[in-house]
Image 1: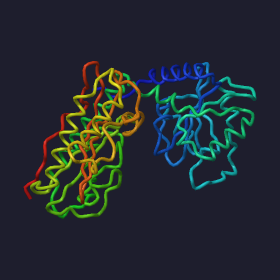
Image 2: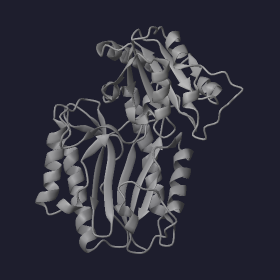
Image 3: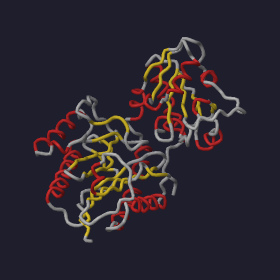
Image 4: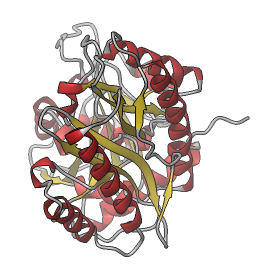
Length: 389
């Protein structure tokens, strides 16, 4: 059976689409930067995911493209990536800051010349602004001191927000693997286990079933740490009566959906029962609101109002959805100021998080927007697990 992945020709089409945006914005070139942690924008064009070092992709208005990597990644990038023109730049080195005195480095000027961009008074768009460190930005400015540097994050949001059929297939396959891992972890939960032991079960399962990596640092939190909206699992031992929050994720060709749900070690009572049930209700309400043509902020405002009207205003942190793709959390978010219109094949995580007095919980699953609603990319969640231990 063929492996689910993005075909090489789709990467080439993405470069063409970006070049059209470069022309539309009146730019001479676009640079996108990435790292091991935030690889999405660079992998979108290159299929290259750096390790230790950083990387960048340069795209000209005519549609030529170059990959810029650190000094140890040239062969790695050629083997894993789909971009033929590769340049070694000192600016993309690892954080240990080695000098590499024996290496002759390329420059931004070399990469630009190779894609047909010359001259001094250039207009250069830089996307992934938050992933462009000071060293890389200084390198661009030193190479092109007379250039105008334009923040161009919106180009990448526009290119990546609506997914292709191949992208959705990768998300669906990754969600399938994640569902299997979630079932295995729930079967294993018992008092005395550590959060990290549960993570180990999840990791073993996703790799056995074809994932290339974790889609996010696996969430297996218990009781107090479930209030962390983002965090890492620990050596904390699970106790009877705890809420255990699972958020597991497998990565396929970079695409990283997650599945999240609370699991009770024993019967749910009182505040825990009330908030788990309300949060699930809010989650299912959100699923019914999503469809092409709706304005995102209308859903977000009604979601927040639901919390307030039901007396759970203090439990609200954010919601109801965030973008999904090459990273489990990507633009666009669905917030009370989000004035964009939902389009078919936009993909989101329905992410319903709430905080109680000494615990938190999250129901979460991946979806794709359709003309009439949304497609669940994983099996439906919603069973409230109360383990008999």
